[in-house]
Every structure is written in structure tokens, then in C-alpha cells.
Image 1 (cartoon, rainbow, N blue to C red):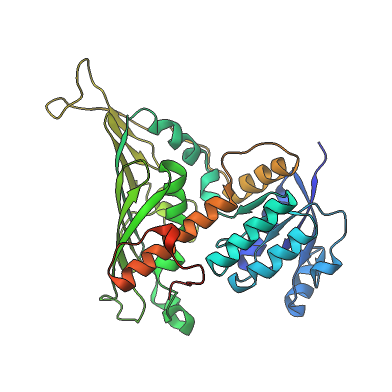
Image 2: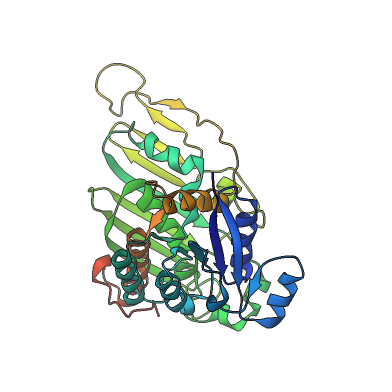
Length: 353
């Protein structure tokens, strides 16, 4: 099978992860890496990477790109890649604003090109299996999530990490929003409470969200970078080697016929005949183990398949990425105004601060 010629735009820390998986993938051929910083470009070229200074220097053979530049550059870089008829994965968020992200989606659709947002957690085998597990618990009633990882003090030594927009709401929540949408579906109303009581910065260190899903389920999600706990996606899944693993579930999904804990996929359900009700114990079924994979590698391999015209129902489409932005920004807006917010009514120019 021929490999898809691909370039990576941006060689910062996230870009270098994409470079790493592109070199490991058997589905793509890394033809170029675009990096305007001459010092970084020279250092990476010395390691044998095909570095170029700008998109105009990328060979015409390229068919796809991963854009991993700073957020404020996403619109310009993704637009330029689409302009060269490349399929694109754009790191999250797709644009600095909803207006930018929506414009990119329209451009990709007009040109008939695949455009995805880089929400890679969907690509874990246990994330994919969770959707099937939910079919066994009846109609979904509720979702409860808790993400609480205490970031080290040195993390905040950089001034920008104490400035508006740098709190966990806009930094970490979008991952959780996309994963909940992947598992459960659209969210149609968000209410948020914010607190900065523990760190005392102008930004929040903790947020509590109430969520209404389109399918009628309700949800709650608490996110904090001040509280020390074993509960988070990263700790529960062992995905990030920089974060201590715990193996603990951080998300619970409850249906009319049982419940599922995530990411272990431990299930509780029917233990005997008749009605499922509170006087009867639920039978526990432990989740099965899954091989640990690099989700970014799985994502790029799936991406290559879409460039070849294969359908994919796991990757985060542009529409999915925009919806995750809407919910995340709705939470920020609710926290600021003290009112529930409908995600698709968030102003297109709103940046969360």
C-alpha cells in the first residue's frame, strides 16, 4: 500500500509529537516539516528531518498536512493547506474563535477535502469500545465526571499561565467535552460555577459544570488543577508519561438498565429475570484489558485512510471540533455571566475571556 505524502506544519512540542508518529507510521511518508524559526529548524534538520521555512517550499507531491502551530495561527495555516488541496488535521481548537473554525469548515467542504480536529483520545481502543458498552445499559440517564490534577507550582512561573484564558476551563476541559460528545452525543445547555479560591489567581483553578444532553441525559463535570486526586483521563488511562497513572475511573455513565465506568469499562447490569429496580443487586462485569497504543499514531493512520477515501466514524470531524469549542466556550461564558448558556448561541467572536 502506497504511503500518503504528508507534511507537519509547526515543530514545537506538539508538532514534534506529530513528527514522531509520522516517522513511525506505515501509512504516511513525512515529506516536509514547516518551521519558521531558523534555530529550531536548523536543529531538527541536523537530526535528518526534512525541514523547510514555509508552506511555499513544501513539495507538490504532498496530499495531507497536520497543523500544530500556535492557536492564533491555526486559521492562516489551515486555510493555506486547504488552498493547496491537502487534507488536514488541525490541532485543537481549529481556530482562535468559532468564526474562524466555521470558516475553515466551509472552506474544506467547498473544496471537498477532509478536515479534522486533533482530539486524539477518541482513537484509544477503550474509547471506541465504550460506545458499544453504552448500548448495554439502556437509555442514558446521567453522566458524572471528575478531572482533578494538581499542577506543580513551577508550572505557573510563566506569567501567561496566570493570565485570563490559561485556567483549566479553556486549557483542559475541551478534551473532556469532545470525549463526552463522542460517547454520549451533543450537549444543548451548559451552566458553570468558577472558583479561584485555592490558588488566588485571576483565573479559575476549579470549575463545576451542569450539562444537558440532546438525548435527555443530564451530566455534571468537575475540573480542577488545584486538587490532588487519582481521577483524570490521563491518570486513569496511563496515556501521558508525564502524569502519574492510577488506573482509576474518572467518568461514570448511568442508564435505565445499568452503568459503565470509564476508562476501565467496568459494567453493572441485570443480575436476574424481571424488572431492574433498586431492591435487586446489579451484577458487576469487570472491563477487559486493552493494549496500550499511541493515540496520535492511531489518529494519523486513520487520517491516511480518509485521504484514500475510506469512511471513518472515530476521527473528530471539523463539525465535531466546532461543537467541542462551542460547549467549552459556553462553560466560560456561563461562568462569567452566572447564567445557563446554549452552546450554539455563543458569539462567534468570543474567545472565552
